[in-house]
Length: 451
Ligand code: ATP
Ligand code: MG
Ligand code: MG
Image (tube, rainbow, N blue to C red; front, side):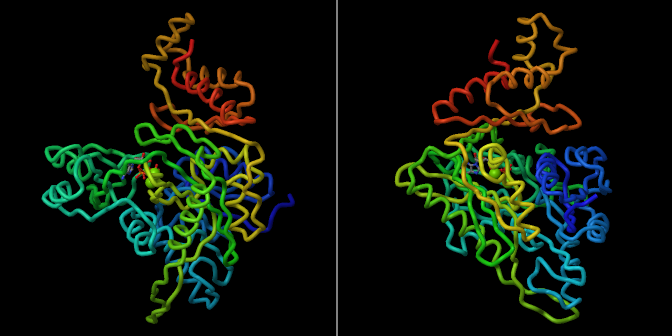
């Protein structure tokens, strides 16, 4: 089999890995995934020798390093100490150019471990961004309920308490509406409640908590920034608008319906934010000697932002060091998708065009719906079908396929759980009006609100 000589190892084998695999397949690039699930969404697409271990498992990461030329990830909650150790080994071999790529076999790690480390901890990420002069919502470290009360007096209510680490889809965020809520929010983040927050070794949540002032945004916007391996090689996709419901991204509109100057401002801010996270100088100890190195990095980054009401001020919410939900539309709507550009950039290939090839596009997430869902049961009654024996996902997909011009992506998840990201659908059109009409139709279908 003729394939690209370089193999990429990917930590995590979920839907982002699956879409990376789709792009890699076309380029003849082999991906090896580390994921505990044998038939994870990404592994289903290739019969390479995957590793069936946790992506947080040090041994699994070392095993991966022995098999591939480049390590990347589709999730930031990985073991950075293993990645750092691999990087130090590379330095010891005298090939270090930066902290991401080096070593006897030139094993590349992109994004580099330091970049992942900074992004993993949303509090540290905010500090790095703020130090670099990037506007973020007011935030502070919180170590006790008493401190959280003092912060409430300063920020006013409501404000947010957030887990520093391990959070996604808003699991890890609690809105504190009044002083009386603080104790419960605290317990939820440190003990009960958010069952999906990463647990510490001793079984308690040890991630730490920080507070964030509530932002009155006009819109949430996002952009995918591609950073190539060569210095200064940075390209951005169009600014999109994202609509969140219960903290989960539901709809993405590309391009965002904002004026050109704001688009430009958001793009510059996002690129500066990515640059500041990737270029932090820091020291690393190698054989008793401290060496100054840079985070450095390559790959795509999703930058989430708040566009404030009024004067067009923009704040950065957070950065993801990987392909991102707000960039799924690029598969159908852009000249090169975010997944292909991720593969290209970590391999040092030319970055593909990030331009839209259609005037407008939108993406709607397909979230899990249980058989007990009221709207689904109503739908089944109206169609004389047995709700217990019918798959809500099959019904949704069949109806979506009837929306002309839509492209459905199903992720092959092991189980249909309520609210879980099961797939997405993209539509493109000649105008925002045409796309909006289709989005309305699609939302009716995915929520079982249309007959
Ligand atoms: P992701 O899945 O994007 O990683 P997450 O768990 O890291 O999500 P955040 O991005 O911090 O969570 O927050 C999720 C959503 O909650 C945001 O998209 C936004 O809608 C809302 N939100 C978060 N922080 C604030 C804030 N300071 N002010 C207003 N809304 C906020
Ligand atoms: Mg996040
Ligand atoms: Mg977010």
